[in-house]
Structure formats: C-alpha cells, structure tokens
Length: 110
Length: 117
Image 1 (cartoon, rainbow over the protein chains, first blue to last red):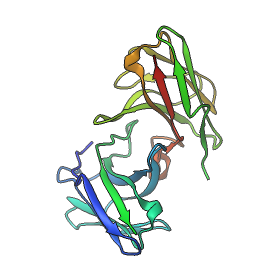
Image 2: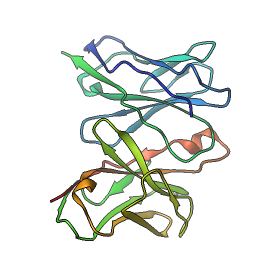
Image 3: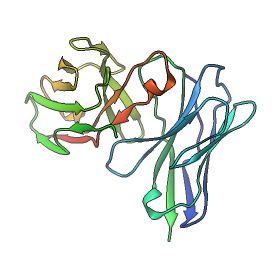
C-alpha cells in the first residue's frame, strides 16, 4: 500500500471550511484513498473514500488531483465536534488491514 | 448503521492474568479485526478473521490468540498479560475484502483501554 504524508496539526475556525491535505505520490492505479477520523478516546470513524473522481457525502467532500498524487478532505462548515485526528489511507481493493499513520490533528476553534 | 460493540471501555488486569476482550458486530460482516493503538505507532494489526473458525496473524500476534466461534463475535485473548500489552485495543469489521470496494470499509468499535499492572 502506498505511503501517505499529512501535516501533523491544523487549526480551523468554527463555521469555516476545513481543508485537510494528503500527499500520496506513490499511489498506484488500483489504490483507493480513504479518510477516517478519530475523536479522542474513541475508535476510528469512516468518513469517505474515492479512486479518481471527486466524492461527496453527508460528512465531507474528497478532492483528488488529476494525477492522483494528492487529495484534500473538505469539511464544509467545521464544528467543535469535528476536532479529531484525521487519517488519510491509501490501499488497494485487496488486503486485510488499513495502515493508519499519525494523521492530522485538527482543532476547531470557537 | 453498522455497530461494532466492544465489551469493555476500560479494563485493569494484573501481570500473568488471562484476559478476554470481546467484540460483537451486528451487520453479518465476514471479516473481523483486532488492532492495538499506541502513541506514535498508529494502529497495528494483531489478528484478523475472514470466516468463522478462521484466523490469520497480523503484524504483531505474539502474546495474543483469537477465537471466532460465531460470525458476529471475535474474541482477543491475552494468554498471560504483561505490562507491555497495556494499550488501546480496537476491534473492526468489514463486509468482505474482495469484489466491491464498499466491502473494504472497516467499521471500528469504541475501543478497550487495557492497563496491565
């Protein structure tokens, strides 16, 4: 599975969009991008995934660059409850585990 | 919604004790996983199971065993707990690992924070 690089921490004002970047320059053609988040002392929560098209669901939007070497998770209107560690994971459609790195610690500021 | 339930949120055990961590999922998922999470090390896979009575070792199986007698339940067993097994333990399940991408999404329980004294 391709390795990902994320900034260790970010701040975002409440009500503003939070844009969390992820680099995955070694991604291969059959690997998907997944995003999870982990609120303190809880298990990771699935947010969204994509292959090459932009994706949107009720939680977030995922923007993947045309060359697929990077992506951005967008929380359109961040709330205090969005304060969490966000993990970007790249993996193929086979395999058994998700490799969580250290992620980005997002703090939403009132 | 998928629900993965871990039997305990917090557990304190003594060195040498046999410890059972239980996990139940209610979505008829084929695959179940046990991870441990430690600061600076991320999540590491201990064992997983892709069917009843089937198990596969993950990256760090030493000191652990698992049991899956029913599809919905996956147990992690610490045969003789040691202080270096103090950690957050996370159970996850997924519908399957082949075919449709959506089957690969893993859903996690809330975690069990185990302290071994």
